[in-house]
Amino acid sequence: MLKALSNALKLPDLRRKLVFTFVILVIIRLAAHIPVPGIDPEGLRRIFEANQLLGLLDMFSGGAMSNFSVMAMGVYPYITATIVFQLLQPLIPALDELSKEGEAGRNKLNQYMLLLTIPLAAMQGYAQGTLLQRGGALMNFGLSRATLLPTLATLATLTAGTMFAIWLGELIDEQGIGNGMSLIIFSGIVSDVPGRIGSLLLGNPMGLVFFFAVTAVTIVAIVFMQEGQRRIPVQYAKRIRGTKIYGGQSTHIPLQVNSAGMIPLIFAVSIMLLPGVVASYLVDSSVAWVATAAQTTATIFNSEGNIYPVLYFTLVVAFTYFYTEIIFEQQDLAGMLRRQGGFVPGIRPGRRTADYLNGVLRRITLAGALFLGLIAILPYLIRGFAGTTQMLVTSTGLLIVVGTILDTMKQLEAQLLMRHYEGFIKR
Image (cartoon, rainbow, N blue to C red; front, side):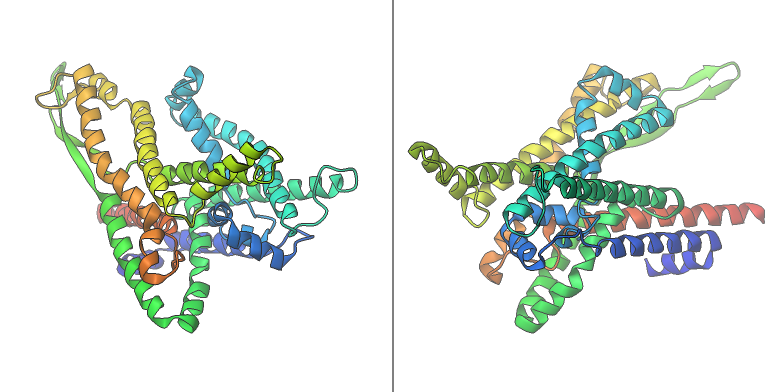
């Protein structure tokens, strides 16, 4: 990796891309420390310690939400819009057709996602502002006559910050190295690591060693699972056109063990936190049975309880299968093979091939689903040894960090191979 980076820095165009990416990330980190007016830092700290969902959103905002900065929501509304459109494509034929129209169709879909991001950012900003206002961390927020203008100004600022972060991410995609959105999230995750190391070094040096060991083992496991794939052999039939013969070559379809990424973790944690949030508003109800039901629900979905990890694990596994099925259906690999004259040896093209590929995918997804489930509950598994669920980098964060690094290094390697190939041709 260091050799590849050294080679990249020797090439002027690649060096420019790397420097450009670094400068954009510095701008994002600086913007993440510009707070929205009216914030009480101590009240904000208390709310984040008591709310796991805010910690997850803080990770997607690149650490900006813990300061409630102008970029507090980061790219999370855009991620939500992307997931919504992925789920809607099989249900709305017009969106499905757009996804098959090449680059022009993808650009149109991206415009729709950006338009959906704006109201999602405004709604999420209002929800977060209301939560902070109720916790005493944000002043002059609400829909009353006295606070309406400050509220609209705050929502406009937060929405603009989200769109600014998305724009910076797209600049990285166009002129830098790596995936812009992933790098924004990556920068926020790793920016918290030095502070956590310092606090553990001062308070619990042996705990720091333990967490380093857990982090190292987790990284190795994530790389192994992220790169794991089942290769399905594919043969293309020979076609004769005039005096030329086309096709006849052999290749393979790489089916990923974990093709869902970290999306199931987002779905699962959102579902797990919703009942507890609703129950918190009903525990003081004057109706006895409502208050009792709310108290029971709050106990079950309490992140510090023993039932929570079991439910969390189950939901992650279920959502992994759900999301993988949706993405695989959209790809329509069996139909693509049939149109291109390809077939899996020993399997009849068409429906038989689709059933075969689905069967293989479901079997290998079991390993990916169980792995994601273990990643999700890893903080609870180590709680008995470390006495805390806090890690140097959260298990979900490690999944993002490792995936981002692998993707960036693959892009860098591709750029290097391309340039070496061109240099060989010139000779």
